[in-house]
Length: 112
Image 1 (cartoon, rainbow, N blue to C red):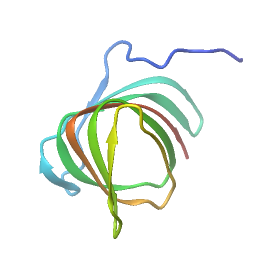
Image 2 (image 1 turned 30 degrees about the vertical axis):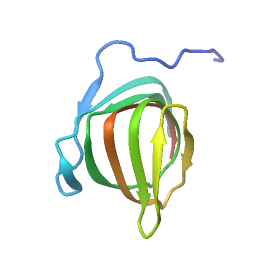
Image 3 (image 1 turned 90 degrees about the vertical axis):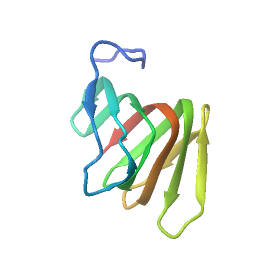
């Protein structure tokens, strides 16, 4: 079935935190609102309060920040400052850190 859906927070989010083994600083709380999903595909809105943690991507992710400031750093690479309006694709195999400087909200599409 083909249809169009808005990507916006709706209803109660799923609340989580980074794996304690990957936490570097702070006590970030993540909120995720799934707006659509299919086998191997998730779309929605994600928000995090400040903190830093290690990330390891096994999936593709497209995202666009809608508010906040974060710094994404690939292992061995230069930090990338992310602000509202920035859009990126992260490929499987990316490892590094995600540092939320100011509470950050992003739209995302994840594909396994």
